[in-house]
Length: 222
Image (cartoon, rainbow, N blue to C red; front, side, top):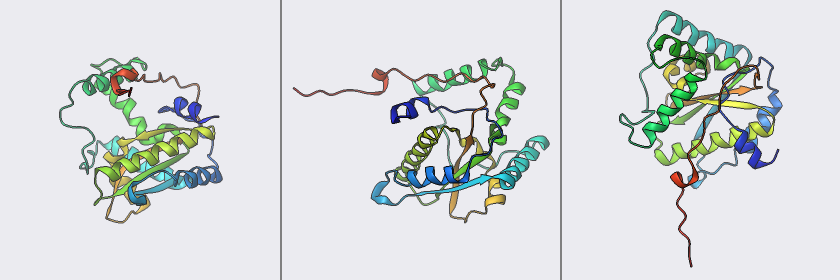
């Protein structure tokens, strides 16, 4: 698989088989991803990779909180601006309509939407998960560095025939994750990432992208 295919075939997969991901594959991907760029090479990402019993324990704790109606944890960062302006507002709305529409869930059916969203905290059945933390003292440039690292990880997973789903949703249950991985206090959970082999029987339409002219401006010279 060449790099173009890896990039364009990467998508947020929301249905995995229980097939185990080999430890050596994860180590190979993460060793290569270490070469992702970061300002002054400070490499601000901190990752915990869970499989087997530890991952099952995180899923169990999150599932129990969902079942008992335990409220989400206090947010440690703002996932979206309070007011999204155009065109970002329309893109987010279109994603929601496509995501839930593909599942046959109407906008008004809030209970069904919540059930669908709850699959996040089972990692959509994936057998491996990565939890990406960042130091609380870092600023926007370092968060961008972490994003580049996460993208590199996801593209390398595609090269290995694997799929992934990055999930800021895990930040809503950051206490449950911390109870298992015991991160130092100075680290904040940015997101989780489900990793595994796609369950091709699960239908999940792919979200489109804006045309190039909406996001890129070419300034040509003479």
